[in-house]
Length: 297
Image 1: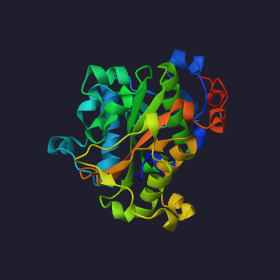
Image 2: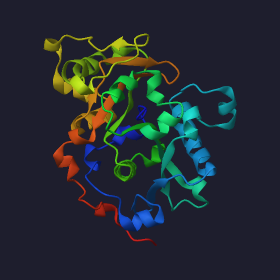
Image 3: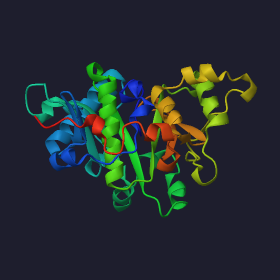
Image 4: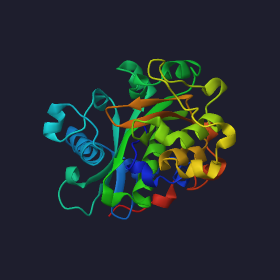
């Protein structure tokens, strides 16, 4: 899944995707970028992954009331089987006293196709027919984004810029062609989001080679309001910010939604081929990501 409502996506500006290559100075230090005291990079140890899981628990369980296994709840961690195979993107605030495990304020989970195919597959395969989508593109590399969250105090444009900086630098490094994952509406009653879901259904479902569907036993129709009754401006206003951001980038969605009772959300599948990203966003940062080119201190 790409993210959950009320977390990182609440401030996600589409402009932070850019046609960039990882900054060589940062790559040598293992960093993807820095703004002020905030840095983004991959987790380097099991202790840092554990700390990221604690951040996820604070957001998903304590704040959003998602359900987790009792043994994980006792430890205050949001954990699943994919954590062992994913790369974990972090945002750290170096101004926080302590070691790096105390400094993690945001996280994103990245799963490349080659890694997924050697293991348990993609997380979103539990809700959507991702296999058919990938099979139609044997020469493209897919990457799933998921478990995105940011601590409340850090839900700012700077933090989100760094998360997207990290995602994009990682995608460039691994020559990713397509990013995808679940994006969510809060709550398990799709009718509460009838206008927004119907707008997606009528205007933004992926077609042709990018068409994607929910698993038949979980599929929920998004066709809840007739096309002629949809006010586009109101529909976009009712859209979760993450989904709005991806729409601006050029993303499409699967044809049905899925209700995730464990997380208390209604999910849609986002499909974002790199080639579909709007050119004005691809030129936002410049070729070398120099916007975040602060020197090591």
